[in-house]
Image 1: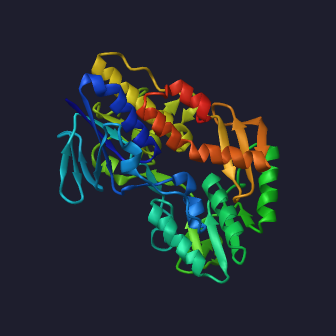
Image 2: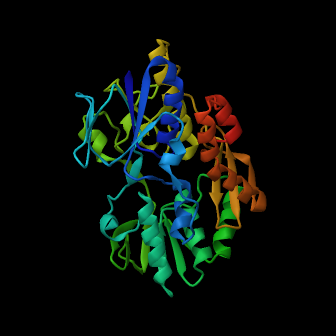
Image 3: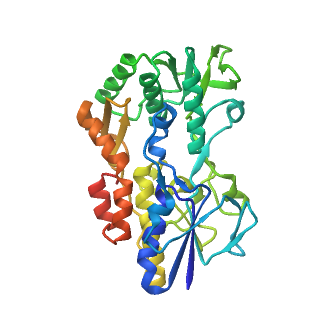
Length: 382
């Protein structure tokens, strides 16, 4: 038996585990999926959780039931690629023949005070803590740092759910800068309608217990600060001797294999994956196709076939603006904006379809009904 160990049960890790289990079933593959929590964390909905909503919960045991994947609950404490062993925080040691590293990324806390005083979205319980804090406030200012998709979704969701609070969105550039002019204009209008104060072109120097210090010495009071300005790979990868880039992501070749350790594959936000237009940035849009591809590569290896290189192109930038509005920017494969975009009710329905799509996909994966290319086309994720 070839033991395939998958670390991390987010969108990408679950896709890789289900795909590998299905693809290696007849060639002696055994797949174990390791995750710290029994709950599947819907990262696409953490901004909803933070705003006080309660999206449906899914247990990992139910997600992988009937697939042949063995689920092990435990937090990864150490990885030894030379010995092909993973140690969990309770002392258990798991051996492997092939490893899929899908532990994702964590908030870049390099700005002083972020780790101590800001709320982040690294885990579900952290979004719950923010929801509890916001629910306890009768007024005051909430600062959201970061003008990317996560920051904008969080600012609009909080402003809509907690109209008594003043929401300030801080960004080095213009929020939604990756979108085309028409979609950005719509986004600006939505932020204004919801009462979100936008401070663009600012740099945060320090997060304080009760506020933010900006470059130039300006101080903003804040009853709560949410930090969404950048991510990094977990220190575990570099500490294990794996080759990583400047953001701590594992550097992989065209088949998603670590360039330094050929028995290790990295997928999702944990991997630095190069395409002709550049290195992919972390999204579910690219993460699930990566997981599927890693599963196929492992199946090819067990059959003695030459794996195909991973190829991916972006399709859209879906952005919710609270529960009743959204804007969808369609893109070229390199993520640059096309002319086409959706707004309003059609965009809301589109965004909800994208956010809900992983679970039907997982069910189809267990039945062997999701070719990689068909998934990319039908789900709109590649």
